[in-house]
Image (tube, rainbow, N blue to C red; front, side, top):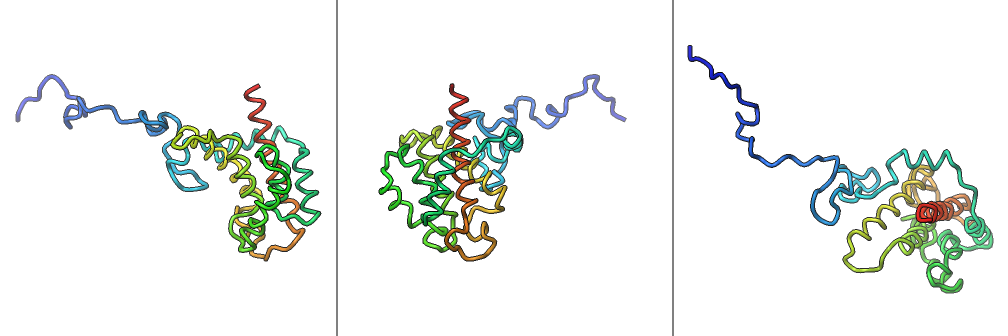
Length: 213
């Protein structure tokens, strides 16, 4: 029987890996590039795209639970959205118009711009019109407007995912078809959805303002 050496090699040395670079920590995300250290290496539960989770706060449940515990009263713009919807505006118009001044639009322009989004894009029951307008407002608020600004885009995508996630949690979908559970969109049926879409935007803005104050 051959005598064993007195020095026991480590497993890495036996496999020839002693000088190999350390494996990246999957929990910390990439170590180089514009998104280094900014995301968890797993798919976003909403969009199922791994890279989209870099700053997606929406599905990190602790943030949602903390917001739910604090509670936020219905804001003025959410109330205005419900009032506009009761007057006959589409879901998309009702959410966009109260925020028109922030977008640099007058009320007439906002009404014209958003009308076609009603009923999930011209009553085709695709993406919920209220959340289309909410997405536009959130994007305008947080975008730098600089082409190729990937860091800025990451922030916008995260905020939009947060808004969509909160809406989806309550209504089990973000398309008109899913939100209405397969029923056809009819006037005055979505006041609660309109209020919630506007309120999500208001809460997000208030939280951001408080964080930067």
